[in-house]
Every structure is written in structure tokens, then in C-alpha cells.
Length: 497
Image (cartoon, rainbow, N blue to C red; front, side, top):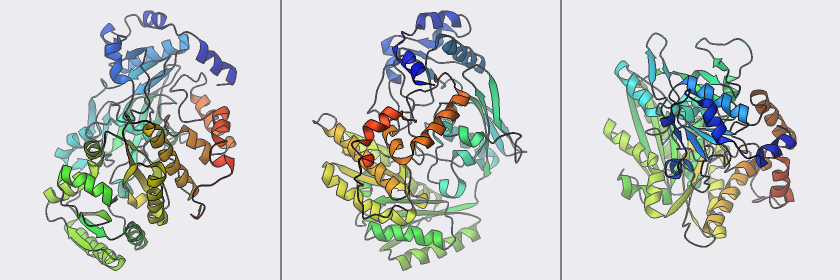
């Protein structure tokens, strides 16, 4: 969309009455919400720092209704933001003040579990965990397991390319989705991907996954199911410093072992989680690692022994191996409940998401400790150590003067540090509105222009989730005066590559 078109979209008065009239009987009246008390629950996603009250919320019940809504929005030039379960953490599903919010929660049917192909065909509103629950009687499950898997939807997982604690071995959403059925802004239905090893034409499925609702609306998803391992055990390893824990992560990967999960928590995170979950975490450790092996019993036993040897050599101060499935699950419960545990010790928290090369884990965590003093806020660190995906939890109190602003600046500094050491501004939470300024830091104008061109190929009108992910030239120019583009690089002692 060119600047003139964008200005027109920003200044026009949306004709919601005309849009609803056009929809007529295509969308039942009970699926359209416009009263403030009905639309208020949709004003933000899991990132509550940013809120916008949607003028209209539409909750379609099938694909035909979605087609009708998209065609009406195009006809009236009204923006549209698709929303799954609302568990996202980057403001990606934050409504547009002059648009409609399209909630997909009612499309929640598991349409098929195909044992011959080990796949599941589901609608976008199906919960992540529900897929594995449906496949469990057949000895199968869906591998990506975000911490919010009990609530998050597969459509939202596709929008953000979600991962989880087992993504190191089994991959992100993009590695486990075979095909999606999509409605474009023109109301056309297209299919991307295939159940075959390859599909004809350009490979657009991988580009669509992680596009944050800017290219089309998903109505059906085919996911890969894998056999449940016969055995799984977890090592809980304690370390006297985050540097030695970070080196242990590097050493594990260097041996050629790819654990089913490899997670790290610093001391503050452990002390935050343990009273909440009572997982038996070591409260004396400066950092703990959770390292899982799965496979046959013989494979697991061999891999556990090899990993224990690596941890001992790396200087682990305490090693504990789960002795039952119940104990394995409680070890993971502590890690997966880090976010709600933060809510018990702080009025508000801000969960960041960036990635770095594994070799910089310890040094970056020390830099974050320095930032705690700089911004006068606490930060607990929990993250996917195996692939360097950080999730710092910045704790603040929005009732205190300037704490929201300081939390935002703290988060921005962490993301820019990730870029400086050769990482990225997001691993699995997406960019949304939260990280749009840091996109100016990571990418050149030419690269951002390419992103815009790709979006225009799918959405030439700029109506699908506008003002997210891709910053304008004006935004980058304004942000650059204050931050990295101004010439001063934070933490210059850290290598950039």
C-alpha cells in the first residue's frame, strides 16, 4: 500500500453499519458484537501493555462466513484483524481502532485423525493441546508445545510460528504443519503446502507461517503427528553461575546430542516458580538446566548417561534424574508455569522474546543483570536454551510512575542486545506492535521494503492486520535518532557475530 492509500485508510470514517448490512444473512446476528461490554474482552492479547477497543467483533462459525466478512471489508475498505485464543504476547491480535476484529474461536473442530498418514486435519480455533489429546488413543501426538498449549489455538500458533520446550528436537510450527487452507482478502480460497514431500509451484507455506495474520485467514490446518516415545526422562542440573550453565548447553550440542528439550532458568526464576509449583528445584543454584531425552528405554538410558557426563565435566553442582513419569511432568510444570508464577510476585510482568547464538548465553544474561540496575526493575530469565530463545520476564507495577515506560525501554534494550550479538528480535512470539521499532534496528530499509512487497502480493489493499510487524520509513527515522542508528551501540564489548 502506498503512502496516499495509507493516509486515506487512516482518515476515512468506517461505515460499519453499511458493512453489517451488506453481510445480511451471510453472518448470523448473534455472531456480530458491537456493545462495549461485549467487545471489551477483545481489546488486547496476552500483551496487555497495548489496548484498543474494537468497534465491531465478528465471530464466524464457518468458512463461508469468513469469506463474506473479508469480501465486505474489502468493499468498504475496512481493516480486519484475525484473532485466535488471544494468548499471543506481542500485540499481534490487538484490534484496529477503525477496523473489525475477526475471532476464530468458534472454528474449533478436529475434522480428522488420519492414521494412515499420521496427520490431523483441524480448524484454526482448535487448542494446541486438544490435538495431542485426540491423537493420544492412537499412540500419537502433536510435537510443538508452547507454555500456553492448554489454551492457545493452532491458528494462533501458525500466525506466530510458535515453538515450545520440545522445539529443539522436533521443530517449530513451521516444521510440523503440512498444509493450510486460507481465505485471501479478495475472498478467494487457496491451499498452501501438501501432504506430499513437495507441492507444485513456489514454497509459500513456510512464508505464510509466522506472517501474523497479514496475508490471509486460515480456515483449516493439516498437521503432522508423531509416535509418542516409549520412554522419556529429564535431568535437572544445577550450576553455580549462568556462565557455566550456558557453557554446558554449548557442550551438550557440541557432543552431537539433540535433547528432546533443553531449558534454562536463572536463580530469580527458580525462586519465583518453586513456591508456586513445588517442583523440587534447587534454590541454591544460580541457574538450572532441564534436559530431556526420549526414545526407547535403551536409547534414553544411554543418552542420559552421556548427558550426565557432559554436565559433570561442565561443573554441575547437583544432578537429579526423573525416576517416574509424574516426576518428569512436575519438572516441566515448573518451567511451563513460569509466567503465571511471575503474577504471584509482581503486579505486572512483561515477557520478552529474542534469540541469540548459544555461545553468548552467559554473557547476555550478565548484561541483562546490568540492565536491571540501569532501569531499576527486576528480571527473571526462563528460556529455550537449546536454540538460544530468551524469555526475560521484566517485573513492574503499572500503578507506579514511569514503571511502564521503564519496562518498555528495558525490553527494547534486551532486543537490541540480541541483534548486536548476531541474534534476532523474536523467536516465537512474533513482532506485532511490541517489537516494530526493533525491526528498524535489525533490518535495512531495503529488506523492509521487500517485506512490504511480499505483503502487497497477498493484500494489495493493506487491510489485513495493518500497522503491525513492518515499520514505516518515518517510524524508523524517528526511532533511529534515539537508538542504534544514532551511532551508539549498547554493550560494545559483546561480539556481534
